[in-house]
Length: 144
Image (tube, rainbow, N blue to C red; front, side):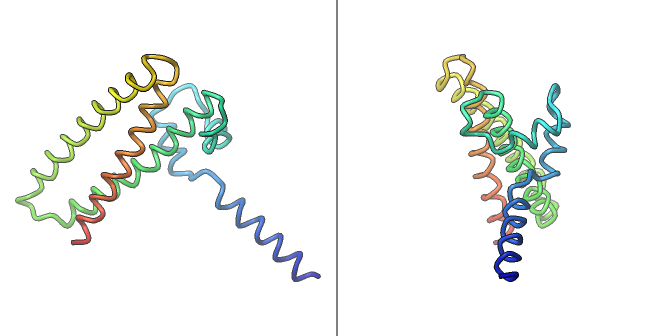
């Protein structure tokens, strides 16, 4: 019986630990967002399906920030692996990609929400998806 209880307690603790907001993401969000607290982020970081606009935007921002941290780490690793003669090309490609991402997501936000309150959500969802794809590409490039 003690073994079963210990297993259940361990399982609950593991689930709770996995469900907690990542401190790196919270800190990064606080650097770029005003008017919200770390408590707000920790409460709503997984509220994308809540139906509450504030929670949904925090969640979408959290997911995008996760991918942005991942992208920046992948870019840094790739820069370290790239020949000096190719660094400018890599930098120019990444700058062009960032401009594309921002323009594409601004368009998707307008097209998806028509300027309504959900426009920010469309933009964040788009940025999260495109940033995830670019991080994957940079990780793959670094493995070649």
